[in-house]
Image (cartoon, rainbow, N blue to C red; front, side, top):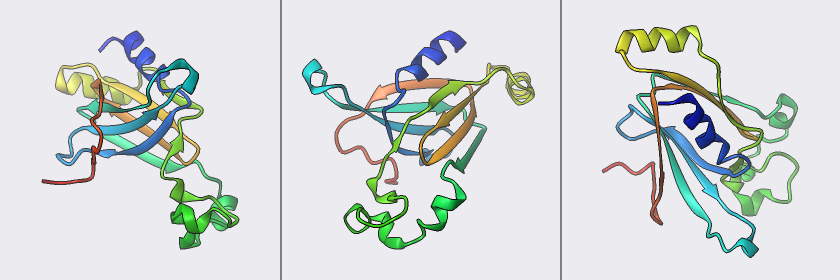
Length: 157
């Protein structure tokens, strides 16, 4: 996958909302579900986009919430918007994270070179930063598609 094309695909979701991320139910690829919305005056309808990071050999997720905020955000009422909205702390129950500062393609690394050599295909590393999680992925290809209403990535069949 061309690095310039990949970088452009990542730029297109800047400052939108991540509503889900994790490995797919077949556990090879990593998906990031992004809710995109434009100013209503543009007439552009909101949509859910699936960013499918194919052949994902490494996924690291860490909090971007400070320890001080975590300390006041342990109350289980904060995992539900209705019960958490009036409390001090991070309201986990909003069920989305702002894609800010966003997603970026990282420079070639020892890990990307090692996997590229081992499998004979190009590998890339991406860092996705939100207001709650930072995710770093090592993968080979990215596919973006619009999702149908009702898509539930966590359902197994």
